[in-house]
Every structure is written in C-alpha cells, then in structure tokens.
Amino acid sequence: MILKEQAIIGLRVVSLVDFSGVQTGTEGVIDENYGTGCMVAWDLADQPLPDGYKIYDGVPAVRSGILRDGFGWDELKFLDLV
Image 1 (tube, helix red, strand yellow):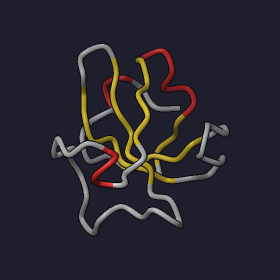
Image 2 (tube, helix red, strand yellow):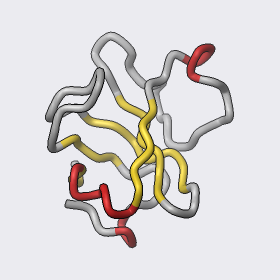
Image 3 (cartoon, helix red, strand yellow):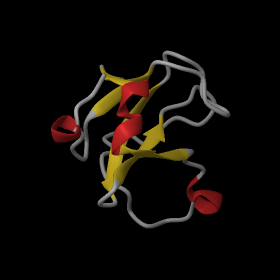
C-alpha cells in the first residue's frame, strides 16, 4: 500500500487488484497529482510507456495511446511500490 506522502510524480507502482484493462501485477507511473488524488499511467505489454516517462504532458490518451487511471487518496490501497 502506498501512503499519500509517497505518491509523488515519477514513482513506479504496481496494481494489487485487477482494473478495467489492467491486471494485478501491472506496473505504472504516477504521472500527475490533481489535488484530491493522483493519476497512474500504465505500462502495458501492448501499450508500453515511452522510455523515461515520468510526467503527464497533456497529450490526450486518444493521441498518446497511454492508459491512465485516477486514484483518490483513499484508493492508494490498491497500489504498491515497485
């Protein structure tokens, strides 16, 4: 489980549960803090993150192909540190 204080941009995390399009054990990167939570960009086998990816660049997913999910601070229990 990740604590709110640990949820910094660029941190690699792993999913502890299945999400839509994301299986347990999938790694990702916290790429945005939106105040009440954070976004995770998933590093999928068929949609890998670009090398060195750490921060959201504002490009919509439809153009970037990056799958991202938002997590409220109370939902960090579904993630762990890599």
